[in-house]
Image (cartoon, rainbow, N blue to C red; front, side, top):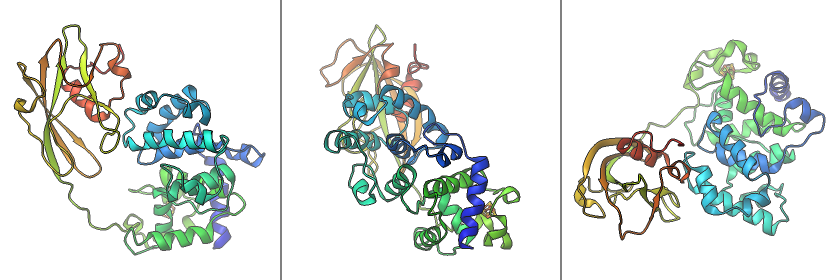
Length: 354
Ligand code: SF4
């Protein structure tokens, strides 16, 4: 079956490839057009933990503001964090900036094509280095993301649960991938997993690999990949304090650069984190005010759920470290999704562009 999978998959991809702003369409690739490593790297970093549909607008915004790696390396970190706001997993943005600086200033603006050298750069792990090397440089590399894992676990009915299943999955991808078009093969697997071999109700009837798929023969496609039992996420609670000036400006602070929401803009909160609850009452506020309770908001991080009690107060000054963000500036601040929820709970529509 070795060649069958790659031949059938690439024929399907030639007709059905998703049009994505960072991607070279298969017909252009076959005509010799090469993907821009900067585009491939930027999109792959954004796609870690984030859906394609969300990433597209962010990707276009980034390449419009910073059309190449040198431009991004020379940008203000604060501006990069602001442009990233809303995408989540903010350590990615900090690593993105550091990686751009290394490539621009120490590597003559050229991304390396070697997996080991790519992996030595900030924010680039096993998967991302493989994806960049296959897609941007045509290196013969097996690329395995969640979509590829699902497709291959089903094709070969891999009964080991994840993460142990990654080893046989990787082996099967390596045996079956196209050494002629490794980048397109990776993208074809991703597209098949995203559009046809979906987690629920895969559309096997239109799948190009239907005659090669063991799980389809047995009719137990949704069983794969086998997952270990889910661990319950802990629930944490705390309080957030929205302070407004008479002119409508909101008091913001910057989180420390490392850790949860690192480097992002936030309103003052009580001392909660993934391991401990914070206080929920107005007694935890950084300054004494006539606080009004605005109800609670819920947010889920990778490792825990959070319920924040939202408090609102008015003040003209504070000695706390931070800054006042005017009514027209708030939408442009580096506000994570959690803080947008807090602010909207206290003052509806305040984070929308004015
Ligand atoms: S036949 Fe069905 S389960 Fe098998 S790879 Fe295709 S879509 Fe996935």
